[in-house]
Image (cartoon, rainbow, N blue to C red; front, side, top):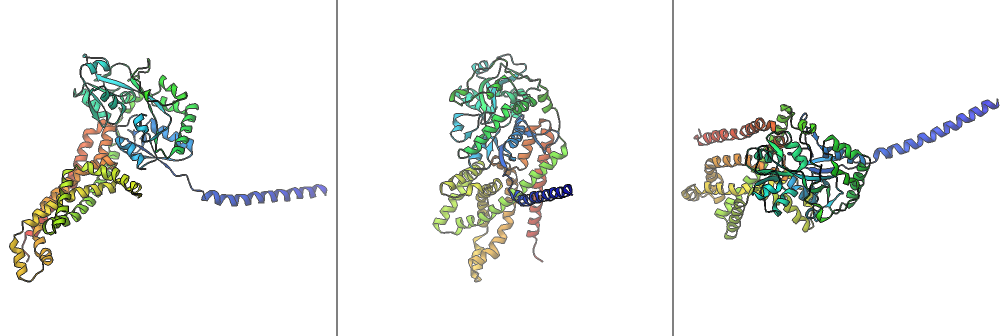
Length: 526
């Protein structure tokens, strides 16, 4: 009996305990469900010609690969926070970071005192060196100094430490936006040598029998992640995460996977303080990379599925159409008032309209886009506004192209309206018609017949000029093509023809439409 009572008591205690645990779970579960997920960090980098940093997978062009892609994934795991990639021009990474287009930049950014004045660098994650590459049959020189003494022309990448070094040495140089273009020009004897980071040489020149190394790697430097100065807490968290990746061996594993590990990386394991003289120009014996590496050959041998490239080019074409149509609508909307202001407005309005036309016709459209995307937000911040965080690349492109083409449209409209005989105004006035009514009913319909051909010509030109918008991170058709071409040189010709065909498909029908409208408008009313 006592055993039964004790058993019942134990059962009741267990039941009470289980009920308490269940109640706690029921209370905690909704709170856990309501806890917001951590906001993803935006990582800015350029995938164009980005081997082995970040580039399109040869087997699946919708996927990004590279040692920095793996490093970003490892950092996301350490920080317990997702990291999302954002395509950005390499030359514009620092300005884009400052204007808050993304949270950090990691794209083989060389740590330098000049950049350190604008951004807050993390601890270095890679020690790089520059490598001189020449043609395989080059016999005039075998070292960097030899090429320099012979006044050879060096090819290099825009916005890199190599450019600064060559400039300091007063060397003849030709800058490129992509390694592919630089090494191609070298092979075609358009330059005498290419001076770039050793790992870039490993992946882009290593499999080319027409090229060879000249001397050992030199000019040591450090890659680091760039943050805004005010994001010091985030930078400290990343510093700690990098330190853990170095200590647990994950960073070494990533570098060995991409065949970029060498003895120089051992200094990453030591304490580090960046100083201005870190960019020494001495080589480390034994640090020269092997150009016959399996990773480098594999990265340059595969050809991507054509249909994937075609689909992404199609997306770029849609962006091109969208930017073109919206820009032209803005240009047409502004062009007519500008033309009327120059022709019929008071003196002050004629002066302002004339200055607008002359300024926008005289300034390159690329400069206009860069100023609107980077300059206007900076001016807005000085005035206490927050425009910079909301001005999207496509919006800036539409505004810049629209303002630029409005000047040309204004001149087209002015010429068309001026071609209408003055006697038409006088005849309408004799019939008692007001000037606005005369313009709307008589002058404008006749002018439109003359305006249609030049307007069509401007629209076609605008289709092509949208390619300039790639400089402010608009992924339009030409930008997509350059990304593929610089990531996989094997498809340059085929995709170039496809891209040209897409431009023709979008622009040629406009000519037929223009001619058809001219025919319809010239036919007498029945």
